[in-house]
Image 1 (cartoon, helix red, strand yellow):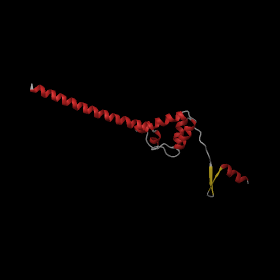
Image 2 (spheres, one colour):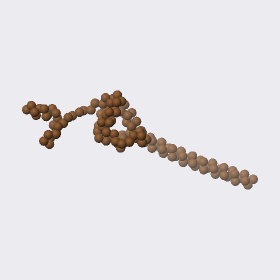
Image 3 (cartoon, one colour):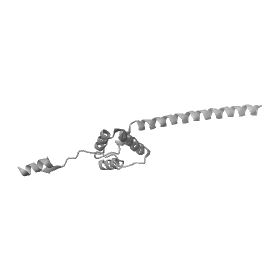
Image 4 (tube, one colour):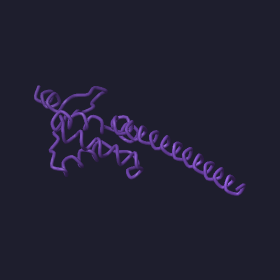
Length: 132
């Protein structure tokens, strides 16, 4: 009978250890899910790490012209960055190319200015100056 009591005690101890381990794993899983949700909730914060140059300007213009599609692109890019599948800087020209290749003809305001004698002039101002 003594062997039976020891065996029952060992089984209870093993069951207690299993429950503790399961509780610990569940806690880790909840923490991990919370981190994933936090990342998914703010794609702009994630994109801030890799977008450079005029990428933010392109993104802002794209949002005004294609709000729903741009939101999905932001979320997908942020997901790729958080998984480590997308690294390095994203430049404005690259983002513009991506949008255009995706079928979204994002139209940016374009200005050509000329620096002459320390002053910036538009092409129109420069041409008016020549004819005067």
